[in-house]
Each structure stands twice: as C-alpha cells, then as structure tokens.
Image (cartoon, rainbow, N blue to C red; front, side):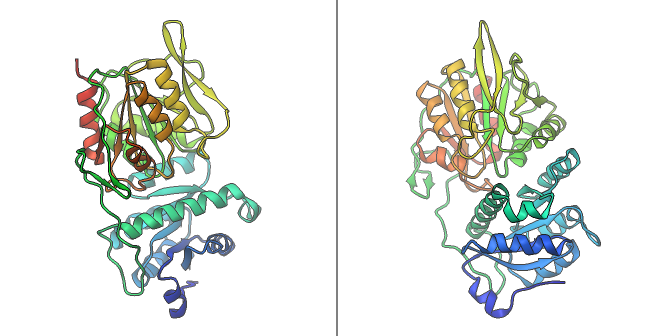
Length: 385
C-alpha cells in the first residue's frame, strides 16, 4: 500500500528533504519513518513495498532521496535502480544492504550503476528501535544527499516540491579565482618532485569516484603504491578491493598488518581498522590499529595521512575525493606542512562536497579538479623525473 502524503502534508514539507522509503516490510518502513521524521529537516512523503510502486510514486512526487531495499517481491531494488534514475536522473538513492559478502557485492554494483550510497540493513526490529549507530548514519546520509540534491543546478522540480537556496558553484579550473561557499579558494604550489606514495581518502560517493579514477590511472601507469581509506564497514572493503582490481587492472587488496608496502599495488584500509604506515629499517610497512575513531570513522583518512607524511616526508601525493564531513583536511594539512601535495575533487563532480570542500577551504590544495581531470593530473606528477 502506498502511503503518499496528503496535499496539506506536501505543502508543509516543501522546505524539507523529501524522502521515499521502498521496502517490502511495513514494520521496517514504519520504524525508519519515525527515525527520519524525528529530524525537523526531513519529511517522508512516500512509503511503498516494491520497486514498481516506487516508480509510480516517483511520477507523482517530488523526491530528493530514496531509501531502496535490495530484495523485494514484484520488482527488486537492483531492477528498480536504473529505472528510477532514468525517471529522475538527479534523485539520490541509498541502497539498504545486508553486511554479508553477497550484500556488499550487490551494493558495490549498485553504486557503479548510479546509487549514491548504501546503509547496512538492520537485522532485527530492535536494531531499528534502539540502534544509535544506524540512526545517526541514516540521518547523516539522508541529509547530506538531500541537501546536495536541492543544490543541483540541473534539478527538475515537479509541482509541489521545495528547493534550497542556490550555492555558489566551484570553478572546475584550479586557478586562484575558484569559488567556494566561503569565498575564493587559496591554491598552493605543488611539490615538483615525483611522489614516492599516493594516498586517497573518500567517503560518500567514493567507490564510484575510485572506480573512475583508477580505471583511468590503470595498472602500470604509475609505479608508486596507492593507499586508500574509504569509509566502509568490514566485508565491504574486501569487495571494494576486488572491484578495483576488476575495473583497473591494479593488484588491489585489503591491507594486512605488518606487510611491506610495494610499488604498483593498491592497499585498501579494512573496515573498522585505521591503516597507518610505519618505517621498519629500510622498509615501509602497513599497520592496522583499533585506535579510537576519528571524525566518527574507523578507518579514517586523517591518521593515514599523518603516518604517510611521517614516513615519506615531502614525497607524498594526496587526493581527497567526495564524502561527508571533513576527514582528511587535518591530515592533509600535516602533509602540506611537510612539503607534500594535496588535491581535491570539485563540488560539481562530488556526490557530497564535504571532505574535499573542507580540504579546499583549508587552503591546502594545489588543485581542485573535476573527477575526470584528477587521474591525468596525478599521472603527470607521479611520472615526472
């Protein structure tokens, strides 16, 4: 049964982030609705039981964010995903997935074909009712993606939908006149020496960005090792590394504690572990720690960057890609103070311009670029002799 909002409810929701829930469990939809609507910035304007009903609701409603379950009768989430994006290319879709190898693999495939993010699917009613971690993650992601959707200059708004005030666009060109929400971005001169290591940080929208970047900067293009911290739970990072290998040809794997860093390989921080670099004699090795989360995350980008800077000095190249929050800005500052180079993804190509925006506005970046221009820029610097 579709629980569409009444005209009065739609009118009152115009200035809120408008969410549609798609799940075959009415209990789950009801509990998630209560969690979301505790936040005054969010309105659940549709709640349906399968993908076919979601398509019908999307024709009638102006939706910012869809929370889409994967396994449903009539039409499942993976079948509905491309159809929903075809109906409204700008809508942000969050997949609900189990924390299993199968669920992680399906989620990564969903991200590759257009989903904006995913959330772990609760395993029991009590997880929804009392799980603060789930509640925070759900609210954070819905709001971040909803606000990004409202700022989309290409958004096609249906009658009855609200909109957010426009936000100054960031120039795709890495020149001093580039704009950010707080004014001109100050760009730094990059280290002209080739780096000995490349470190990448990402979060919301990160898997898609990583596939794009490493699909362009394919195996053999550069010889440096690449370290990646992507905000993801355990199991998902295993599948992420496998997908990176498939799309790029790189030998990509989850990092192992104590292993020696080798050139021409990609190391992904495992879920729930910070990935650090430690100098051991003439070698650099990876260390995995359960140190407290930073920026509410483990793995986090900042500790990785601090350790990379300590181990490699000025011969470090960092890319901060799309993601919520500000993780990477403080660690990037340490890298730059040691003489290394930081670049960031621009706002227009980011799913959420939180992490790269924080780095850009901190004045630590040598370039702020559209996603498609990051790999060529990095290759040029990494192969310079």
